[in-house]
Picture 1 (cartoon, rainbow, N blue to C red):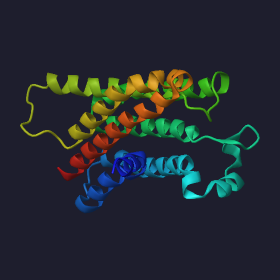
Picture 2: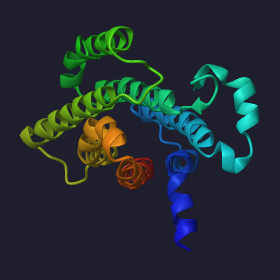
Picture 3: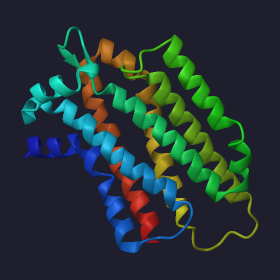
Picture 4: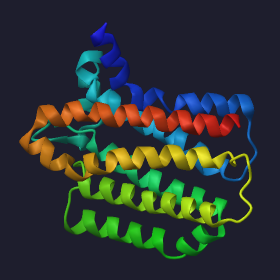
Length: 229
């Protein structure tokens, strides 16, 4: 039973986005802010599914097919296949689409977005050109993305608390922000130290990713709640 639960958790990054996507299909919310969240879920499902398939390729018996078709991801003369490029890609997608999401829910974010996203993307590009190989898991990228999204969330709550006429019922996107807040708060230290953990305590690094997966499931449930409202 334990092995079954672990296998379900291992695949959670792929199946968790399907939960809010199902609610999206059923409820069909028409709000403008739904668009970036919808696109995030679709792209996250595809990228995370590919990353998990690469991780589980030997168990699934598709290692030879991947060697023939995904040779650009292999290192050390075709011996090592990394899915870490996809985690970097997922991080960049998440930042762009949630910056767009915040842009649609408040004027203060439109002011922030005049400079912040372009600056962050410029720094990310410079980092991978000068400092890091984009094929390798980047603690710097994922921790920076989590920190900036946390700033967006903090600004949202600050603006909400300053409003004199606070509605009794929260707007549906409140739950997206809440789920995102929980996710980035939990994972910021994991992302920040993951490269060091992977080098010095690989088993612990693998085990602690379960915390990330659980928080990701919670995040997706909060998005589903926002679509249900």
